[in-house]
Image (cartoon, rainbow, N blue to C red; front, side, top):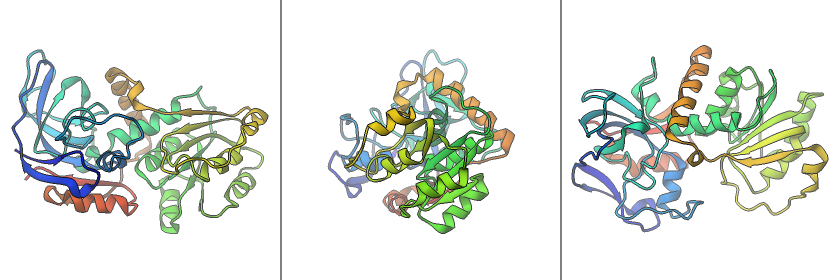
Length: 331
């Protein structure tokens, strides 16, 4: 088979499309012929050796944590999946500690696979798992929100951000979305955001409070994390608010007064999909699919690249697309 191998050196330019051995399923695994695979920022961070956790796989390695494929081989002990079935990959060690989806074939534990969402295209399904599971967990990791609570989403035009806007709106909450692009802010309103602001405007926390008066932000899904934005997010929060940290693209926080947490009873917590079991991922996946089905929301796909153009797909990811960047692996 052909696969994009990463040798461990820092940089996307160190990915090489080459021949690799076809995988053989171990007990409890199936081999997928990959149809579509989607890119995540974590893939790029891994390839650039900027991954926030001290976890790097043995090399050579195949990246890719999202995708769909067709079963071509079934290992011993697998009873509910058959050759010819098409499945979507849920969050797992695939692409992290074991070879991922940027290959023509991949062996995956059957417990990490789910049926294709009804009514979704292959491209939509291929890029939904990591982003929507992250958004769902960020929205539900605290005590349940009261109906029509205010949810703030930073980095709202990114993969997790779009998912959080769609899910929060579908759950009946008032969504405040941050994006630097005027065109993307307009699109976010179409996706369910009640208010949108430019995070480069330092007055956005004040304007948010004015727009919501007297109701304050109850939950923030912070997909940027750190930098100058986190203190601004804290400033925008209402009393007893919760902040779910999903990303750390903002870098170190240079100025942070912990007293602001005490005075308004705020809590900050990190959302990590690695904390959840495959069974919990499957249950969350079914829950979020139900939420989206009731609202009619579907994943956004920004662009689809040929398998041979994975480096160009990473360039598109770095440019800040709205929606998932996908590669078509199947010939």
